[in-house]
Image (cartoon, rainbow, N blue to C red):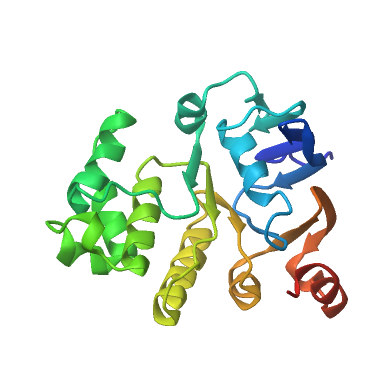
Length: 237
């Protein structure tokens, strides 16, 4: 019996900025109900890979598929409707809108009714429940990150892509976000691709990993295979 097709498949992706090649034959797969950590030092091409996946950057070559359906010709908003949820580095919430308006706009844009989904994300991030009338810009960095993830979850994605979710966040909020990702994984409703440099966080939530260096994938496999040699060579600053 053949193995099931991956949920997200990125094959031989190449990308360039101003004539300089940034990505070199990048291939990654993400299976259903899986959390994969996408790791590497700053500037090696991780965020560029994500931008190509979500449609914010056009690759030079390569193939991107979601559930076996090619995404290359789709605009970023159509990829979101197809099931790609994206929380960029820096969170990118609407600072002048309230927490509730930030959540609601996600439903409106995707033409979805709440149907209990807002209640669900507020259960995942209970701190937001008491802040629905506050503007996003007055929240702490950790609260803004929780809001950004909650907003992405309201699109009901098949794949949730998170770019550096622990960056600049206090340790107790990092723990809460980690616990929430583990809970989401256990529910089995979506897979998560996690760009992250915080090693302990990755070890705590991920099933698998890829390591990137100089625009290419240099290591990958089950998270248990992320050994000291790989960490020292490609991840230690």
